[in-house]
Amino acid sequence: MRAAVLRSPGTPPRLEDVELAEPRDGEILVRIEAAGVCHSDYHYMTGDLTAPLPLVLGHEGAGIVEELGPRASGRIKVGDRVALLWRPRCGVCDACVAGNPVLCELGKVQAATGGLPDGTSRLSLPDGGELHHLMGVSCFAERVVVNENAAVVVPDGVPPEIAAISACAVITGVGAVWNVASKTQGLPLLLIGAGGVGLSAVMGAALTGAHPVIVVDIDDEKLELAREFGAAITINGRETDAAAAVLEATGGRGVPWAIEAIGRPATLRQALDCTAAGGTVIAVGLGAADTDFPVPLNQLVQRQKHVVGSLYGSSNPQLDLPRIFALYLAGRLPLDRLLGERMPLAEVAAAYGRLLAGAPGRGILIP
Image 1 (cartoon, rainbow, N blue to C red):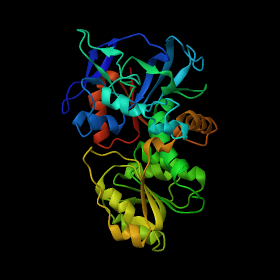
Image 2 (image 1 turned 180 degrees about the vertical axis):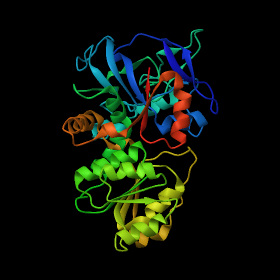
Image 3 (image 1 turned 30 degrees about the horizontal axis):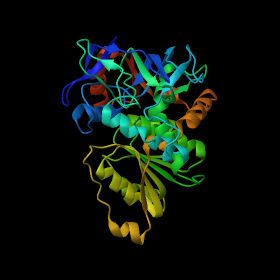
């Protein structure tokens, strides 16, 4: 099959012929229909984040189940459309038992080995050389083998592009509002960064009744999308002192909740400066592995501010993704308007060029 292979940081991924082994116990083979162009993959392309190389990129995908491995649970059937999850779920570690499966211990196994949850790969190069998975998914490919616990069945009526982005960008943004922010009804909420994750958080905030929803970005086209999704106040951070504008909009008090969806120290500090006494900054954006965020100690102590991280929207994907799909089908989450340009898989390098240039909407690769 054909897949987008990253051989070394700093070099563009190339579409190559690769081998894919049959699914083993508790695994499924999925034909990919759509894969989202997410900034997290770019961190691995540049070396900001590291993983065993060479690897097949892609972690935001959806497709049709074509084959079941031995000892399948029966929860997923051949012919089902599934959305793929980039965090495993063993069901027995402390995190899973406590209802926080995005911190499942098998995530460390996948990261360290470049394999599936058992630490081994189903991918290889035609000459027999080693080839790794990215986050247990590797959906910039015609087909994938994944653990069946890394898949959620998609209901009829949800297109593959929507299923793909829901399993990463949407659940990360919406989940940060649903699962971390609390009692947002009638209270201001700030989003910094109007990419796929940030815009999803805007939709989630609108659903929970937060008001006003304030969005900061440096791209007017993205800010217009934010207004369409429910933002009451938008601020171009390139033209305006964003912290001063947020404080002015909130009568000098600041916001109780600020979600930072970029992953930069400067914007995290900006979010902290915008929070009210007792407020919380929710960091959802990733940066380079060695990125530090300087926190003013007295703001934490004297103003009792909080800074928390939220991985994957702090969600329980097997429960939260069906909720997202139901709201999409009911017309409550207008996710179609998140979609950007659709491109063939062979244009993966160009797709990331468009992402870095600030193209609006979530780019979609179609194998």
